[in-house]
Amino acid sequence: MTLDRDAFYIDGRWAAPATSATLQVVSPHSEQVVATVPEGSAADVDAAVAAARRAFDEGPWPRMSPEERIEVVQAFSGLYAARLAEMADLITTEMGAPTSFSNLAQSPAPWMQIEAFLGIARAFPWEETRPGVLGPEVIVRREPVGVVAAIPPWNVPQFTTISKVVPALLAGNTVVVKPAPETPLDTYLMAELLEEAGVPAGVVNIVAAGREVGEHLVAHPGIDKVAFTGSTAAGRKIAAVCGEQLKRVSLELGGKSAAIVLDDADLAATMEGLKFVALMNSGQACVAQTRILASRANYDAVVEALAETVSGMVVGDPADPATEIGPMVAQRQQERVEKYIALGQEEGARLVVGGNGMPDGLDRGWYVRPTVFADVDNRMRIAQEEIFGPVLSVIAYDDVDDAVRIANDSDYGLAGTVWTGDPEAGLDVARRVRAGTYGVNTYTMDFAAPFGGFKASGIGREFGPEGLAQYTELKAIYPTAPAM
Image (cartoon, rainbow, N blue to C red; front, side):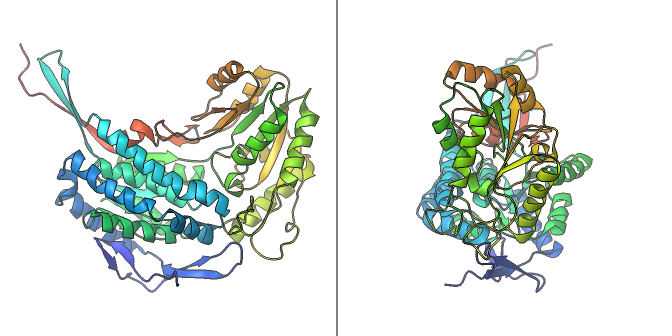
């Protein structure tokens, strides 16, 4: 079965592209082309925005009741649930995520988001009446923002697409999705499911394209809000454009999160946990906790345990269920990670496991050897900059106060964990670290709670009622004249 596509999803139909340009989807494992799809141009974006604008300004979707929209999204959820395995396989094929991760986070987690947002929407205060100060009552309504540009990254493409599209739809918005050029295939399947669920024409439009066309979408006068997940550098540029145009914007950006290992932690359990929180999706995750903080008293034991854990992880074909570390998404990403590994050694960090060169047993694919550095100073670039690969830095701290200081000594503030035998002590640490999400002896994202970051990790929140509220505008209505 071919995965090739020859059209975009615009205005409820499969529309021919404006140019003959194409994107090649390349397997990070085999380095072979697995699909060809159209590459969007500014003209394609203009058509998609025009369709979304008509659907918002003239169509039924924003004028439906929340209950009617919920019914359509519920149908989408049922269709999505039936295609989870297919979605997971597509994402493993296009970006190289280990199938064990894809079948956990790349498709079941997005479906869980849909279900969570449905429950939140049913209880959401779309319109409420409050006692007034100048009059007997005030009506407060939450109305849709308008046309939303949803721009997901390549690392968890459905996870980040659904986190934007579903709350936008439930709130009554229309959407233009620009998937990353590396990972367009999953959005085609999503479009088919949305159409089958009965989402009206023009409400969701999808154009895969590169950075320049993405910039055109962000600056387009027909866009009312931009929802972006990606690098902090790109987020700054988007924020500048949205600020100039006074567009609504939400940004989920980078991270350089710290996992603090206290001396009373169960080391074996901690290492098992760090395999996920530090190296999920082969380290290609914004929440990956790649700074491992260990006390000076326990430092050697943590380094030794981490080295044993990482060196024992299975690296290889992402389609193999036994694989724990797959390839980087593209050759440029492989080269970027290898440059950081070389930089760590130049900066004076001690290479404990890994290093540059292909992992044993592999002679092709964009693989990187899982790497652990010890004797890392938090001022080193490998400790301050987001590498987005399987590279961990172990940093020593003097006491708990010092650990918190080091964890907070970062431009980012997205995630973190603390590992301890004393949950109350762990909660105390969690309250002191400036990060948007934090775990004690675990790390997860609960879709009932807000997700996002402090500092350079972004603006706004996804998930929970807060995530739905990002796609609404507040309106106050005064049904009676105030008493004078």
